[in-house]
Amino acid sequence: MVDQLRPVGSTQPRRSIVMIVGLIALMVSVAALGSFVGLRQLDSAIAAENRGRLDSAKGVFDLLRTRALEDMRQLGRILADDTRLRRALATEDKATVTDSLTDLGKLRGAGMFVVLTPEGRVFAEAGAPELRGLDLKESKVVKEAQKANDVVVGSWVIGNKIIDLSLTTILSDTTVISYLVVGTTVDQALLKPLGTATGVGAGIAIGTEWTTVSDDQIKAMSALAQNPAVASSQFEFNGTRYVSNVFELEQMGQSRPRLVLVQSLASTGATFSIFKWLLWLSPILVLFGMVLSSISRANYRAS
Image (cartoon, rainbow, N blue to C red; front, side, top):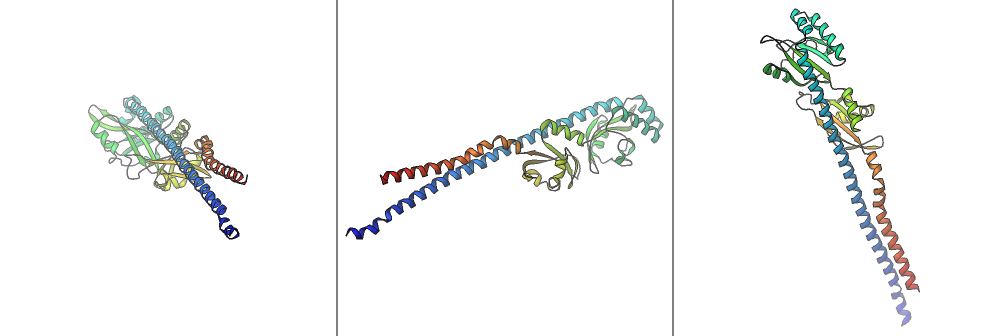
């Protein structure tokens, strides 16, 4: 009778082993799932932190442009009463006016000067050959100046350039004789200091191409210029993860120029790398604890 019962009783240890292995697998799976969720939350927090840096960089970009426009506004007011310029305008000779604008450009050291006719056509320029002969009467800035008879500021998109400018009405008594444009191109001279101050890479795209970038690394990220949807997400480039955002620059015509800001996740990820290891340590400790518990229980039964 005892011999008949032995085969049946020998299956009990196997069931216990199966239950223990199943319990270990369940506990480790739960711990691993918790670690996975924690890692995803940490990655999301890192991305959110760096997106905040992109928003801050956009604020700095706007501030730099606003200050530049205000400087051009003040310069336009001063030059509208400049005796040499008024004498040149009185000659109504394009070469004479161009020479006067060129002298102003040398004094300023950068940017452009343009004289428009009362109708809004380019009469003379210095530092802006791409504007020669253009009729800008449909420009929003010109229309505002024609209504205000005072200094207005705004932007033009000419070709692949964004030009920030002030436009000052020059009067003879109460008659408008011309408009003086003081302008500067939004180029690397603006984006590079932005990158230095914020640590964020920047580029301006018009259509599907970069028009200017803060550094060569951003220039190599051509997909960000070609596809605005890509430029508003996380991506990997040369083995490094980045987060980016795209901001449309308003009131700049149908070409819809965009500011693209890019931030590497490498530095923030390195800071929190120890936490990633700690999160994965949880299932390992659970597995180790369950195995030790099983070994102790087996030894107890054997004794």
